[in-house]
Image (cartoon, rainbow, N blue to C red; front, side, top):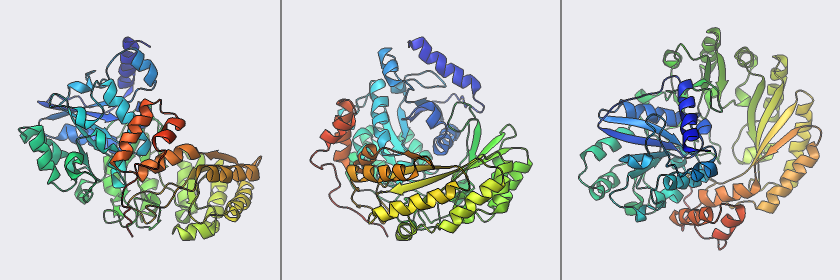
Length: 492
């Protein structure tokens, strides 16, 4: 691949976009997603921040993404450039990263290095851009990205972004800027605060809902307009960062407001949130979308909220696979983690999906939850066999990873061998009956050491990444169990 080919790919994608913002302003932000374009442009938060920066007086925002083929891009010796202006992100006064989850720390490092910006904040000088981060990761544990950034926006950023830009515009030096931000609620400055995180930001309800700015066919969610009919959750699942204790629980957006934001050209609409089907007027919202001739998608279908009306509307809106979750392998485990989904709810979901002509039921599960035994896995095998008689079944199985700011914060990882044994027991029990799609136990362990880690975990991530980024490199970097936070905080 050549530099010209890199630019041609960017230009081709831009040509297919609807809603791209091009703005001339005195100051600029490079907004970077540390995963490829097709992932980043499926992020509702990334798109919302893109709009907010461009709506802030005196500022313009251009996007950049981790290259699809990182090795090929490196060989061209071309810096990481923005989509709107094809400008080196290193030339911007502010470079802002949206980080969704722990393993994207390596993408953040790659993006900085492609731009010729030293990865570690301590190695940078005043000639380098201000490096900022925010995103979903900040609701749990942003400490491992601390060594690489100057400031982090914690939690919901709708009000924090204008505050940040105002502070940047009014600052006389990098040091004074960071001192000011360190004293402002919602901002974490690693060089000043070290591992002391303050409260996360919460946007005023009048600023909801977050919604897409750009429609593009080159995403995981092809040409889908994303909007949130609610934010947060009223449930208390003990493993979840977005449980009812986070930022006031569930906050609702009225159907009229949701529908009023959907542009006429959007033929596919995705309703995004932690508990979309818990919205008391979700049927009205979906009905009005479908009656308008649009397809619809929902990010979080709760099996205990599905009924004939809602599943029928989803089928009319283009659903061919019904996707939901039980998360615990058995009813005993679900009770333990306060996930209230029962077998009867999942059985009913499968029956409704079949009745409305859907082809597949996809069910998300977790294994390796504390206290889980082979009997729990066998219960899942038994029940999955029963479900597969109703509708073809696919299981998406992820190893449990304890997150900070949940009641299970600090819970040990089950163990790579133990998780692999459980996955093999599940595969063997369902061979020829249901498709089992597990995520890697090894990389779940890497996610765990970062999720439970402190600033030192970020430095060890850099060591592992520079050693090639293989699992063996990660294992060696964390061989002595280091990088863990000195104290584990458990939030009830």
